[in-house]
Image (cartoon, rainbow, N blue to C red):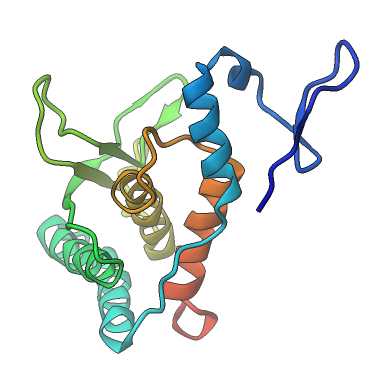
Length: 190
């Protein structure tokens, strides 16, 4: 796929495939801009879920309403391990915590640490929160699954696509949606 970046008249933003680039793109280094453009150009993964993957997806969707963080964490870890195995990448550890942290800007649904949460180097880690910040309600199963796939998408940017960074490009969000669509077809929606 050829990506065209066109400089428009003064005052206009450059475009990629006809869409305006975000303002922060121009503050990135040349290397980071190349990573951003590569990420934006990839729509999906070469993933064909098998029967065990669908069963594990169903297990995650069934575990979430229980509100049992250990049960949810085990189900999320099993699904993540299965997807990583199908994509031939090392697994990533998943932690499920209670109430989402929040501030005036909103609440955090999940976070991915490429090198672990400590200052020193560590193993990649996905942390997900299962309860809303204000009411402490357990999140909806599909919301939880989408958050898991979002954070797994960040991991796959590094482990599978070998990108130097993981940006929220349109391509990234298309890959996230691809994962949710193929793992949770309408007939198993909860």
